[in-house]
Image (cartoon, rainbow, N blue to C red; front, side, top):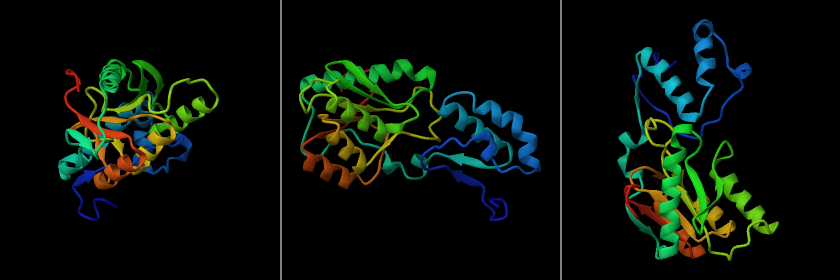
Length: 222
């Protein structure tokens, strides 16, 4: 269908949902590729998407990252809204970025919740929204005994991630989740994370009295 439309450049945008192998619609080409497709499922999301990307390229398509087409979607450095992190929260941000770098080779997730330099939750197949809901449930159950406003969400792409696929993202709903989880704010790696509706993100941050900030290279303190 893409060839019939004379399409050569392809941009993949949106959430990754892994189908069961039995849900894949088979034609002759897919049948020939099926053993290879099965192998791409044996790993994390970046492994899967890179494998699918190679198949597209081998069939004459040029894959582009969404940020290459629209670079303005990436988070700039600095705060969104009027709130900024405290020194203690900046320490949590630094810890969170270091943690994400450390787990990067395992192709696990792109987000972590840190409080007082303690890891409270790691994003995996559940995604950021459900991870934040899990933090809220742990607070309600008394498993997290921290004051409201303690803890930060930190998001960054995996080291050596194929940036054409599945860059981490935040939007107004993420900030609602940060507030619901009782966190103090969210930090994203500038130039590494997509921000949907940045003005709405800033407004949500101000409405909830939480910070949202783009931070620089994870090798340096934010």
